[in-house]
Length: 536
Image (cartoon, rainbow, N blue to C red):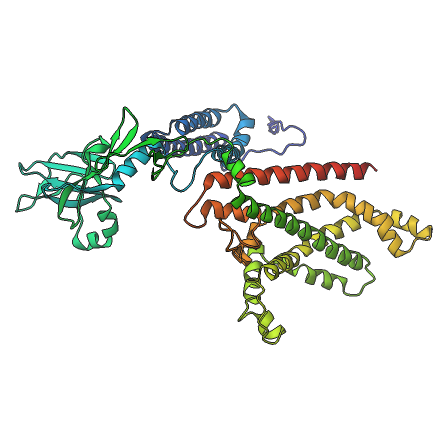
């Protein structure tokens, strides 16, 4: 009788579990993985091609090159089986480049430009806008039959000429002949391939867009444009200004006044008259110089800077003191119900900070807030509209939000102190107060100083509480820029960049750089002192 030898299991390295899955053979799983990888790469490449075409159409060649290099790198990394570490690092590196490096470099670049309202684009766009804003209808110009057509979100004009020729154009795109147009019974062109006529109701709903529609007559910005006032006809308009590309000047045809480009990105005449809009130019240190030396801006800026230091300092010192006292009191487990007390202390920390600020905004309302109406028996106290009370309210709310965090880190630091240290001090005859002041507090400060520095930096840029509680107000009516009594530097940056009608992105970026310098200096000094304190 022949004996069949037992089947030997495949060799498995020590400490490693076998990975064979009888339901999914390795070859099949490899094909599935390859298919998923090909599909994902195809999606990435399709999105990249779309972005490349869009960037090329806008002549953004720097971004085009960056996207092209990134797309090739992604394909090289993920198409093969090599570069395994790069497959894990690539997503993080891409996000770092897009959301950190690019933002930092662009902020630094914008801080040295006049980027802002009136200087949003380049010089050719500024010339085109100036000529367009000064257009008037050409006297005795013929009125052509026209149809308002659309393709997607784009609106254009379909113009019928006397010889039944048809021209089509839209904003920024001059008129061009149309092949195979569709005519109505009166011989008017009403549609073109890819374009459809808008109904009366659609024209009425997009009236503002259509009334502002300006179709260039040609590539020359001096040739004027075609516009429609009623949606069924179009007439020629021409600017009262002429742009001389060779001399780089703009001349008013009526008065003969000549405007020349200046170093600050505008066309200006000899008498000081300036044309708007201008364009973005490099201004060097002008933004920093304006912030630090201009009398109208320096005062509000220094006031905000001082208040920012006060706010950040109190927002660290007071919650830390409260948290330390509470942590020391609840550190002893002999206190009955200490777990319940700890849970109650953590309640403010459970609310999102911006939501807590909104709730306190309602509670502190002068007329209807719970504090005035119920707690103060109907008193009319302007908690959020008086400059000093608003500062006090902002500090109180931020302390209420912050002290549970300080309680947490102080509790952790106290519990990390070895019991032998306090026991030795007790044997030496030290009381609870002496143990806390001479033994626990130095050890605790050594552990929590880096967190205190980080908390100071956070409160230096604590936008949420300020914006949600007071919006930076009450507004200072004497300040030449939009600034309030409770504004921090970060909320001032927001107002410079996005508030009001005079947005100054360049100056906002300059203030951001100053904030970075201040926070970095404080962090470096604080960490050095912390290290010296730890070594001592």
